[in-house]
Image 1: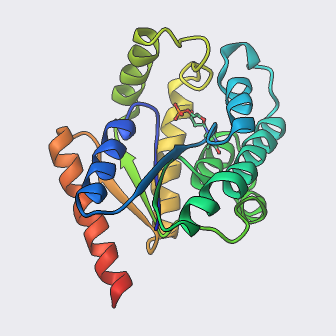
Image 2: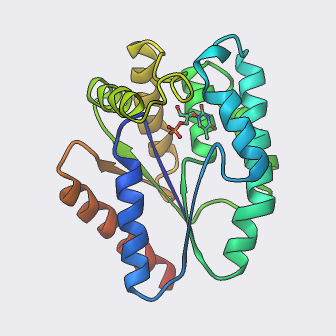
Length: 214
Ligand code: TMP
């Protein structure tokens, strides 16, 4: 099984993914946790380039191809082998981030992006995608604070440094894209307490498993 998690900065994705991992492990499943960008060895190099604040001069197209390169390598070297080994693969961001950030955020054509995603994922789409939704003002504050606390304001701060209008477009982009892909993409309100958010995620996963077994 392949589940991806999406959302703007600062939704609490990392906390929730850890809880989902524990949920599957309690059922005796083996879980593999990964992320984009940076889920493969080469991807870790690409992540540094993509997220460092010094690289504000990346053009939207260059940025796009770096994310796609990261994804192609991640699928081939990590995600596909782990799924074939029977594990539940949980991925923090995936192809929908490209549609939303490079498409709705940077203004590239989402149809073209979807075709390029098809090439990068090589037939391996997630079974389920959960979008954590939160007010961008709140999310951005949380993410900026976290980067500062972890001493990563420069290394990981390129997107946090974008104007609030960019983050509002991203949030709207996720909602629009989720509505266009209702079967696969589900939304969870991330403004609630961590326990409430997890309950919502758990019910999405359980509904999805019931649907799959029908
Ligand atoms: P994060 O690991 O802190 O979520 O940071 C990854 C950043 O990269 C985040 O701001 C979203 C952005 N991103 C894209 O713009 N396009 C993509 O395809 C992916 C995977 C991430």
